[in-house]
Amino acid sequence: HFRLSNEGGGDISTIESMCKLCKGTGIHPPQSTNSASFGQHVSHKYPMEEERLFARYPLPVDLVRNVVGCLISDDVYQQSSAFPNVDQRSIRLSRQASMLYVVLFFDNAVVLREEEARLREIVDKYFYDNWVVHVYAGMTADLSIEWKRFRAAKAALDNVLEVENVKKMHIQNAKLIGQCMAELRAYLTMGILTDSFVLDNRHDLLNCLRKCNIAVRWRILHRRTTNAVYHGIVCATASEVTADPKLQGDFAVNDTHVVSLLLLSSQLEMQLKHIFTQLLEKKESIWINCRAKASGMMEDLAQYFEGDVTLARVSRHDGLIDWFTSMASEIRDLAYESGDHFTVTGRKIQLCVQALEDVEQYDLVDRDVQVKTFLQ
Image (cartoon, rainbow, N blue to C red; front, side, top):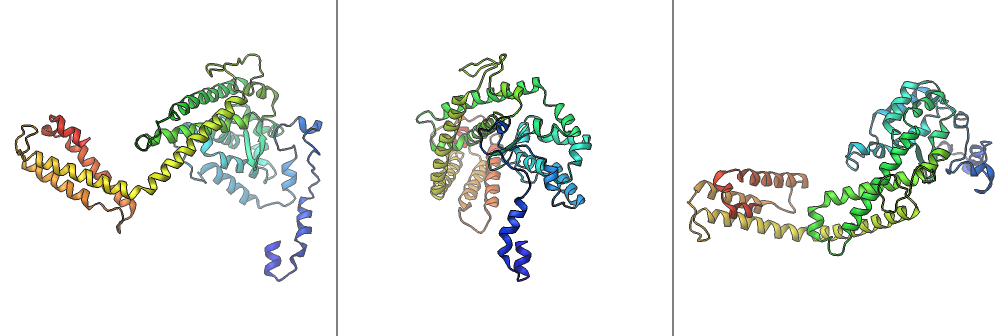
């Protein structure tokens, strides 16, 4: 309305009235979080008939179904690089899942009511290990409650959302929290996070932070479940789930564990950010030093195989002399700032590393411990 009014030169002063008209849904939130009606719904989202609400401004059916199909089949946000593990699929697609939860109401909930096959596909892909959805800005929705009134959706969700499965999810997440806490305390030990350690173990460090975020996200979301049975399991009020402060076995995760995980993971993130920032600032000087060191080692190895060096007795080998001399020249030609794209330079470095690994298989090199030490 605002765009059309502005283009047509109309009066946009009516925009406030239009906003009030759109807000006039007839659905009013509880007056306070202490009210009895709100107390039955722990999540921020209070109950409403979404399909009736969205039907006030209907969208073309084909458009809605195409959007739903795109959200089901494609990785819209391309998060595979951030969460590469196959076990992290639901986390990788969580933003799509939130959008899909909302879009499914725009076709008058036909899919939720009637299309069981489509719902099974959605549940198996997005909600096989979670049932509380973060919609937007702290608003959450419990699918075990929200989809209860839709026959097809409830049937698909019941296939995975059984009490035993919920217990397994709780225990897996609790064990992951215990593992993350142990790794965080090890990494945060004084003197561990040096520049060389971070560079050599960057994949393990980032994977640890990734697991921490996954674990704490699942725990915070599902502590807000409105299903009394599931809430008792996740929040450890069920009698068959025992509390173990050592985080082992069928244990409870209390508020202290969650807060500790948040603090430790944020501390590691802060330290890694500081270290990586310093490394990026010193990147050019590190590059120049490493390039000079690597080319110098190649020249030393070329001189070594001339047979004139008295470090050890070795026969002259013209082929290896030429090879190491050319490799030293290749390394010196690598430029930090050149016309080549960084990807091209990185590819050249990979080829040099691969060549050095291949030359280790040569018999004369493989039998010489001193040469292998240089190459490593």
